Amino acid sequence: MQFYHADIFNTPLRPPQRFPFGKHARLKSELLDHKILAPHNLRYSPKAVPEDLLRAHSPDYVDSVMLGTIDDNAMRRIGFKWDESVPARGLTSVGGCIAAARSALEDGLSGQLAGGSHHAHREFGSGFCVFNDQAVAALTLIEENHVERIAIVDLDVHQGDGTASICQSIPNIFVLSVHGEKNFPFRKYPADLDIGLPDATGDNDYLRAVEEALDRVWKFKPDIILYQAGVDPLEEDRLGRLSLTLDGLMSRDRLVLQSAKDRNIPVSMSIGGGYTDPIDTSIVAYANTYRVAREIWNWT
Image (tube, rainbow, N blue to C red; front, side, top):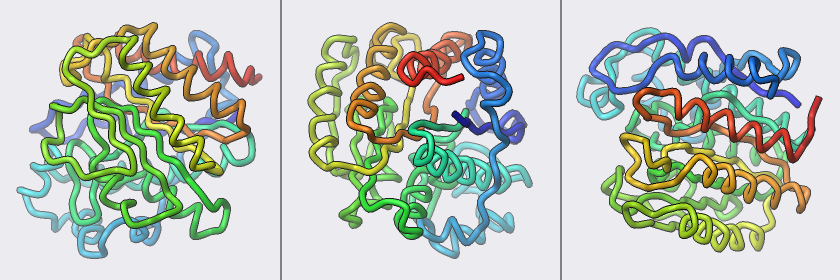
């Protein structure tokens, strides 16, 4: 099994921002220290090229980010100021997602220790998301004739509005979002299936909603699942508003991953969310997704 990472995600961006930098390095260390992954399971994320981005984003938006001509208001919507690391970070997130999806088609499972930039729209970025890695990866696999049908299973606590808007007119991409109904984004773009949950939803009700929603995914019969394994449904997450436990999140991951494996559907994972303070609980939750995956696939 191969999983993708990059040092660029540990580089702090210019303020103002509330993004917890360093969590990607912490996750890598956690996975290696606990022997969930071995060094030979890790590959450095390749950078996408700007042409890849045009599958999901407008040329004007891509150019503005790559050249640094994007205006301050647009960057404020994303959540930080532009510097040279912004396009590098975006290209690496997309490149890692594409590489992980290709690896999943070969091995049954892959992922990157970053990504999940589901708030990026065709014409603009938002919510710490510059380019939409899963949307670009899905469109790339289809364009290259690797697959016919793709399901994006987005279980971040925030609705994947950018992914929904980019993919809404593409019949062979099915987007599921299970999220907090009253949480960001406050204008939600309809996905193929949206499940909005009330504040303080706990493990049992959340797992029941996910299981019922997954029935629609299996009926779609995807050739691959791009899984947004958000950890911000945790009760401790300061941006979450749901009330899941670490055990509840592991049960969710086991439900998604085991059900996909039982159906011989490859899965490519991206992490999402993760805003506990201190960040330690989010790191444990991220690592638990990989613990569950290792239990199911039993890689070496």
